[in-house]
Length: 216
Image 1 (tube, rainbow, N blue to C red):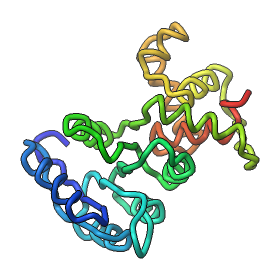
Image 2 (spheres, rainbow, N blue to C red):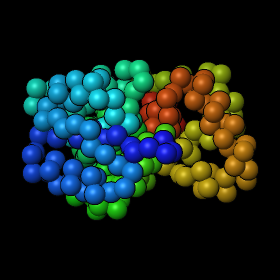
Image 3 (tube, helix red, strand yellow):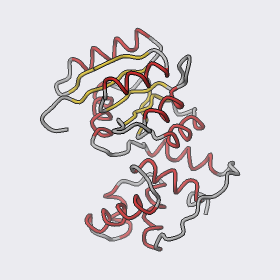
């Protein structure tokens, strides 16, 4: 992404909110709003035609909700990163959005600096999963009866790394907990991404969540 502006697509059915965010992003060096969408279907169409780097996606929209739109957008090639607008009381939406391919979440009342940081974070290919969101996913998993995902082929050390990622720990926290170097951790994460066919760290959280690591 270095050397050019990050292209952002705004998808939200509230015109005033979109205008506020557009003004913020257009006034921020390195960011450019390339299109706006008021429905999920419009978001999908604009994602294909404008090829944004990041889609800022509301969950509740007419015609097609943000989760369905996220699933379609992340299936395109090349796929943009999707940053979902959410609130902490929408646990099922958070889970479903992760399954659909979202890379992160921000609150609709997020401060401007945090929103800008979040856009840069997901654009760089990193997941944006606040520990508070992850903890709520873990709590919700205690009440789910979905079939468990198999972790066949995962080494015990990789399993430990996955468990800590699922619990929302950062790389530095995992390194300190497991007493391993950054290079070793990156090797483990790369292996997990390959073995679990995960696109990014957010998808690893889902894999750990579905495998039961949060309940065992």
